[in-house]
Image (tube, rainbow over the protein chains, first blue to last red):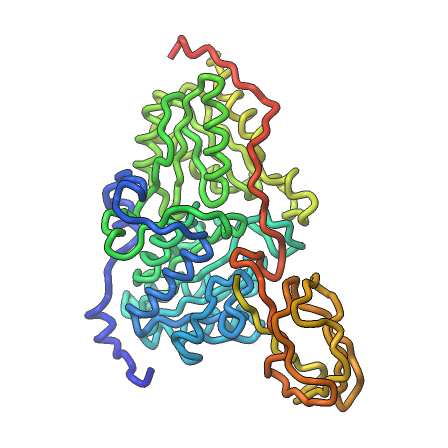
Length: 367
Length: 109
């Protein structure tokens, strides 16, 4: 850890990827993991842990910091065993101060490191918002590109685990609104593994929103050489259909797949689009799907007003207005503080609320 | 299964050690979160430590009368690999239930 990077080293190594590049990169639906090669079955928890270990091995400048990420291995065990493997200098516990975690990450990034901070729960991200907006999001711009902020901020996000107040929020619209930040949310173990590895090799700051309620479900993950066919950019069609597009991200993708299964019993073929990147949003991917289905419903856990669903609806409307059969419907949380665990089932969009939203779109007639 | 070690926490302002008075759990026992673990005595007081989590007790450190330093291992639990974090519970995977049926006249498409 003794060597330091000079600014010219940084410039030489700088990956000039920008938000616009991500939008321009072609959006293709890569094959399911099983089609690509050998897979291993693991939970999202294990997939994230594996991805972090590989990032730390490949990049000696990568550092992991946060509350309880070291000795304990994280409250969700995402960093389990990493301090033992990489030492206390590279995986370390911080004081209980999110402003300090992000402030330190900014300084480390300026000194040439790639910090991977964890904010233990999304509800604790608020004390770090000043650093995230005013430093992380702006430093590259402010320094005319000489001080990029290669920070991968992991945030266990959303609800669904019956946690008390402050332990479940949906902050994607807030982060997506901040210029200079990228925001991504994986929907399952394979996505989590690859998107985290991708995010942690970017020179841009990425807010990595891990859906807590999906940490424990297992699925096939392509690791190692078998991962070559994976495209981390843009959105991804996870189920094809022709009558309506369901747009979701994070934990809601799995729920929308259940809804699509049920809708098929009624003769309605639903396409499920995992948006993945919440900033920048894959406008081409949205337009391609809705151009085919001509109907769209967007589902998210966050409150409705100024939620990301409004942005998705607007993009779809701008690109598909002429062919849409109905206004884009939103099925969302409510405009209330995120409720405690006992009320979660009433707040998070459930199967019936999503089906109602679909029915409203199917019934819509002009005039 | 995974093992999780719980070190002796600082039980007051800057205390550096505590003496075990009596263990309230035995090795092999399954306990719930907040179950009393051990009674220890510091220079300030005798206190009963509640368990930070549920799990099977694998090992305990320190016989009654022995002193343990803050930060040294106190107890090791065995928990399932996919156990929940310290906050919240693992959601159950349930077969989807529905009340709403879809109906549409798709002939117009």
